[in-house]
Length: 289
Ligand code: TA6
Image 1 (tube, rainbow, N blue to C red):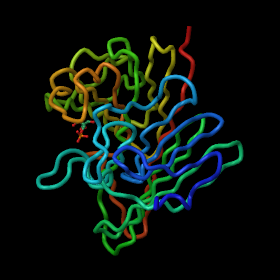
Image 2: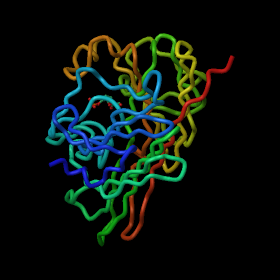
Image 3: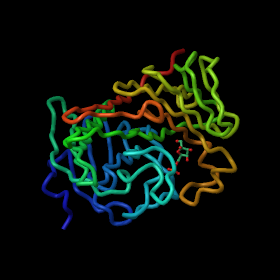
């Protein structure tokens, strides 16, 4: 029995047994096709019904209950990065979330609501995803306890590009960032970030929208965010790609991550009764001539 079956909407939302036999929902709307796993409440595929996907998914990704999915939008909570004796990037992305609602909205978009099962602290964690011509995601945390709650959160979004050598990430000029490889802080000097080596940067104190220019596919992937002060830009490049068992050696050529969240000095602290919302909206625009 697929636990998601009761949320099916004929013609729009279908419960499927996806890769690894994991329960998922296949979504078809007038403007998009998508696939969302219960595991990690993970948006694994989203994009126009025709043409190349917008989200990247590794052909070598694991699809098992104890491993993160390598691609799409991993939900990072309650910490970002490695932690001694604990799963990297937190536990949310390797947890089966509860699907509590599926809605067909006027105009044909589909909205799904997931809640994170009790995970050891007094917080309510809700993930809302609206799928249509844009991908709209909301990560809502409420402190239900009697003491302050501090956490990091991030949409670790993998995006598909035709050729990393020609792709650009725009919108971060003037923003301070930590180069994770060098451990040093810099200020972004360029309108357009281009990739020529492993790139792993945490841009801080930025609410800026970004866009990924893909001259080969002649499209812009636009990312707008709210409730987020951190943007991470990552491409593993050759050596790190070769070290990742769930990532093809040459897949770095066809992806990059632009991640939106609140990390490090921008970790979120909620007093009892407070709520935070991290929101991202991704859509496509034509490549300007
Ligand atoms: O997105 C930046 C980053 O922290 C990189 O350092 C790299 O480790 C990436 O996340 C992927 O992490 P993962 O745990 O999914 O392999």
